[in-house]
Length: 421
Length: 196
Image (cartoon, rainbow over all chains, first blue to last red; front, side, top):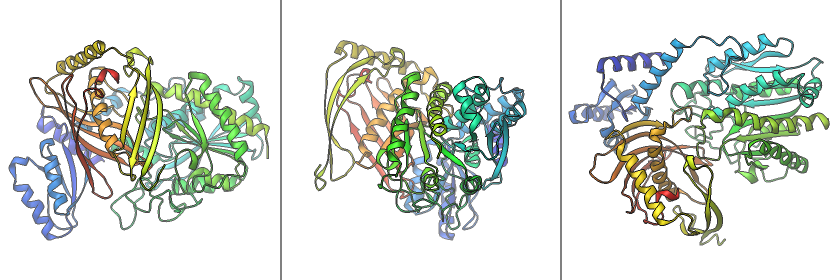
């Protein structure tokens, strides 16, 4: 990434006011000498105005080329007709330049936030900012909040879980995770808001205080840190982890298809290039395995809530089979109460039901596994909206979304408190 | 549903104003009959709606949009609408609206009983300089469900108020390197933008 940044900076400086709107950078993989020759031929076509960042040398060595907008279609057709593999490294050079310029201005202008009261909850943040927030929250509430590292990501980033506890020894607990799919930005943003909300409401709101006096809450805000970093640096719409798959040029496993519940039984893909690729085996992803280990070691989790966006749905098991969950009646009733509570704030309408009957068959999903572990109150949320903005939900909707979702979470948590098992 | 022949769906729904300034004003009701032949894409649609905006107002709204688009820096070039934070600059809102309309044709052509789409983002916009028509080249990203894939499509859209919308497109399916492409010409009735 550093190299790329330097390169694009140099580009911007060297070309001054030239603009690169619609220019794409392609990474071409020439499989043999003949293909390399073909790409060299392309180099000679001056009217295409190609700018090779990494020229054609030998088979297997990546060829990077910036293609001006008017030539993009022609170049792609040329490559595809000859069976020469390529992928789009940069979809729009100008927007990358603009974004980076903006980032630099922002990071130069911004001083580190000093307290969680000064933190801006109504905007999207980077991984660094969220990790800073976590440390601040812990230092401001040392009696209530602690940070646990449950593992490391594929690329070596720490995975953190916040523990909210008023004491006891391994009390029955509630688990909430956000951001398992990295492009679902409103979820990590909501997770940050939930964390702050917990510290504000304990001791103030009687219902919530009763919950936290008897149960612990575990909150994993950035469940897929590698993916999240990637949505900031390269591809805002990245969903999966960033693990490399042997034998494939494609990257990443869908962490919501990698769990050991109906793993790879339809409703997930065996193609590493697919956005629902399940991985080579269940729990292959450290992001998933870390949670599995944590849940099994803890042994006393009573409610498990995994938060996604978008579609406005509250879902319970199963996704991998049409067989009804034994607790279907109770889960359905509770879901109904939860979405009613959610709608009470702004009228936001949610549908609810089992995963397979409400959206589609999905195997190897998180809450199917947690439910089969005996965690009865296993739910998946799909937050705002229903498609108009989708993953690119305007930041102005972060707090309203978090607020209404919190009411649904309270409903579930309260029920778990009052129905111990 | 006769699964040998195809899949029929009957819908009843209400419409509301798309224009953000007007808020969620209820406009009218529609009933539609949707037919997928042999699970193929591009279902046949028969739709009737209660007339909720007078023709004169619709024409006025269309010309307003037309003027807004003509007033933008010509020829317009833009990228990433909305941005990563979901924000669309108000001056670029008409671009988004028009792109949404064009994309809806593309999505209609690709929808099957098993695949549906949402528009995620315009990755690039390039306007062609013309004397009369509004003429754009877009690349968009469509979110495909349930595969969760992000499908890039190039769309060429030509519009003049009162005339049928012309949409040419080419989409790239990532896995199979297949392409879906086509040309759509809307009827004047169904494409009057004030109804959006």
